Length: 346
Image (cartoon, rainbow, N blue to C red; front, side, top):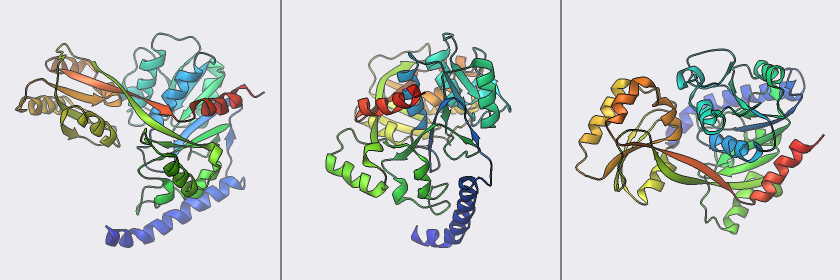
């Protein structure tokens, strides 16, 4: 691994120079930035995927929705369409992407007035369209920290507990998409996927590594709810699981399930577009299990790609479930107060 990193290092230097020059141009006003004229919160990271942006966006929505009219804007990664789309009951993962569809089904499919989810590859156009059409109190930008053509009023930067940006390298040697100095554009940093029993000494060590205001660093952990069935075949007493994932980092989910069950895995690439052949293959592997009391489990984002009509008959033949997740934030009251203080500010 060290030898490969050594070979890739010249490319890393080139990428660092390119991204640093780009950031310099935005910082100096050489490249223009659209400053969002209403309250807006950006959720993002410095690395390639897997830091938990979706659960945090869902957390913010859940905690702010009762008080404010919210519109979420996402690029809609993995969708097969282009342009601006506002999600409705006819939306599916092919049209809008799995993460926006997840937000919609969790929060907005019951026709919440003046709130919703949107996708657009041009964040500036999408924001202007949202303001014009819906006049929200707040826009939540999912995965836009490095999209510097727009500037949100408040930025939340996530870094994975198991791979802090302070310990990482710029791609392709590491997974950073820009220098760790990009952290200075953030208002708060959330160390995601942290152990729930993390000691205060360990937190202090991490805070020292990140070199950011300690009062603006928070730790979040994953919280798992009960498994939810989405097939006609249901098993109530199960001990064995075939875990099927197409997400960036399925390891935390796998580790959680292994605490209670015997787990076998089938892992696909991030945002994998499942085919009928894939689902048949999954069902076939499930049949080869030399166990009884068994079910198939997938993530909530994968579920968004498996609820299309072409899969319904195949999935109904086996006990398919999905695992919904949420997050818990240490010093939650303080974290939410920072967010709400910004939103309330005139």
